[in-house]
Length: 301
Image (cartoon, rainbow, N blue to C red):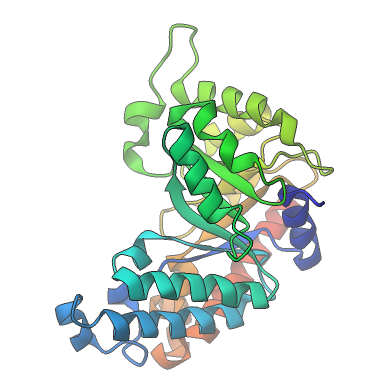
């Protein structure tokens, strides 16, 4: 049995890529060629057609970036809002990614009390028919809401730690009686809880989400958590750049993947890639992924 984290690290080394491509189908950003604007005028009535368009878009993006990345991350909310057709598209998207030998990280931020967390874990990480290698979770409920997601050691979990949104400071930066911030205490908790799930690479199946938009904190958290693998969101559209995420990696350039969703999916809408045109959105996405991969590898050298 190979731990999830070792599978991920191996795939990263094979691709020489530390990027994660988010699959977040913002409907208003999809090319007209893929999704006719009039379908959006009645989302509920046109769920099937819209979901089919999203699947086409996702497959083309996956085809374009499959050799540039080790992992893709569909954000569940964009599929849930399309009802059953949207959820079918989510599962089909993940299955298609697996045919391209990619790691699938489902961004669902699931959790609840122990028994319900167990049900979530069974649904997403223990069902042999699913195509999910890992899932994002909320650690707020403590260990009985996390341990069920670690039962299957061939799959992993990414717990929210220091998120990239501006209002994160309202709770995550609060000071505790012992002088630590909330996010520092959560970090210590995740490190200790994950110590029983260390792979051969030295990192744990219990990973963490740490945003690129707070580079100072990212550096401090990396020093604090030497056995915790990071998913670093916030690159590109949210303002983080290659120099901002360098501190999230260890001295060997390991220990993290950096997510970009809109910056890759909808690169054709950016001036830099506008020459591709909307019809060649997948080629624009590939160019953006290639640039991101190169920038990150260069700062890590």
